[in-house]
Image (tube, rainbow, N blue to C red; front, side, top):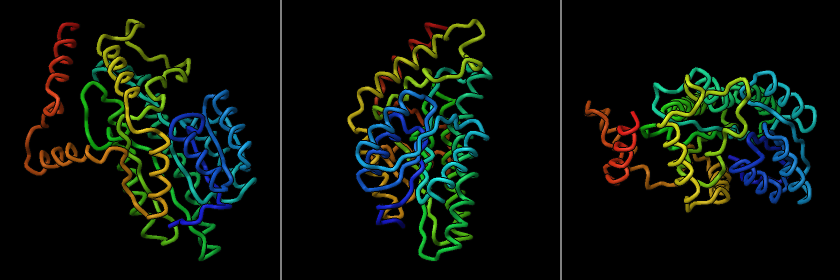
Length: 306
């Protein structure tokens, strides 16, 4: 566990907005060295300027976390500037919706590339550095936090690619926790599973690579994709829990050695129902049982569009 953050180094992907930016702000207030990575250069520059003005030592690099060589370069630059990081927040993420059979190969490449492989690259690059630091100093402590989603514990319809990527991140993180426990007591791991929080992720298509345009075979969004986008925009923008509050939960969890970090604990009721479905070999329960009107509206809109 890390309880004194002053002077420690933290790596943050997706640092230009949302959770990453709020974590960077907290890190600056705590006197940490900040390694900021983001694919959007203007947002990265603004974040770096802000935390530097607060007195933090900052290394800021434009990084597409889906690209192994770019994350490896980030690791090398971090080692050269600050040494092994004490905290790594594999936070960068994107969203894509629509009926699962309507998602293109490019949709899968983009979402899994950022959401899953971005985390995998971060774990692959930084964990060995942290283990080496721990071996050299018995007092050294480290922690890795991977950002998943409640979509990694539940399976809401009309957002299958995102669900698949986030379930994989939860699995990766749980395995990381267990694997670390086999080899060290000095490095911990957590997984962040937020629900709808205003972070800008619903507009993540702004940073979609030009060579992965996605959409449908017609070149235009399908009806289900447009419906998903509208629902996502509304849900994210109306979220009552802020990104700053979630970021504070993350630092508190690191200090407490807590693995699962939730923005909306009441959503565990849905997780419990899902697990009971599995244990009892039941078909998946209606995800809209608590809000049937939303489910009915979605069904009507999708059936009318097909």
